[in-house]
Amino acid sequence: MNDMREVTIDKVVLNIGVGQAGERLTKATKVLELLTKHKPALTQSKRTIRDFNIRTGLTIGAKVTLRRGEADEFLTRAFYAKGNKIPYYSFDRQGNAYFGIPDYTDFKGMKYDPEIGIFGMDVAIVLKRKGGFRVSRRNLEKRPVPAGIRVTRDEAEKFLVKKFKIEIIGDQFGKSEA
Image: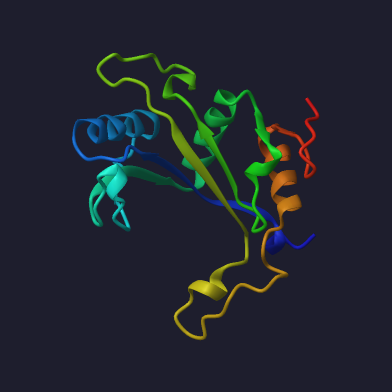
């Protein structure tokens, strides 16, 4: 097989959305710092939702992006927190995977801190081919990524199962295998 067709992890994005600025957001950033040793970037709301008291531009969450070895190391810990199982519906057609972790204390070595409370997070895994995606990021003659270069859902599943020894629960018809 061609080395440039090999599937790799482009990035892992951790996101905690708290829905409001203030003390809760500060605690969420502290959780992300504890888990990743990186300073989180704050995220703003994109539109106004009056029912939730959210205005456009209000800071409502925090995120951290991990790449290369840090991404691999974090994913090993995250899959352990999930019991090395993720559901079939966590994968999209573009070969990316998404799952949630309900509490940061699920991670190995993390203890409950009453000052912080309970925070869950969303984890997004973006996969790419080793030689792909430059087409969409170069300065001259940018183009959409061709179908032959994109990572498919099946390739993403096989890659994560092989690399992290996880189990994918269920199938496309909603039947559970476990």
